[in-house]
Length: 131
Image (cartoon, rainbow, N blue to C red):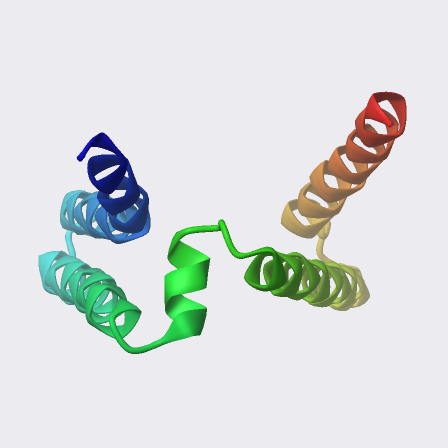
């Protein structure tokens, strides 16, 4: 019975996080003076989280993404994360160049690039040391 509880907690972690982020968006947008957008953002996050819970029953992919015990799904997730990282790096670099070409400082993009670069180097070092 304890295994079932742990399993259901793992499945619920992502949807619960989605709802919590919806609350964060609602509060942040309400504080910024735009509560209608906050309610919309909250509704989108709740719908997405509910959709994950419903799709989990029918979709092996969604089930695998919510519970990383399947090695094949974990490998797909790792590759998808790598592709996402490459696209994000390209977007940050292009946005930086566009900003400096417009005569701006490019500050937010340079900081994102710096954080990404330092994180990558730290990960390479740590993973190399761990074997």
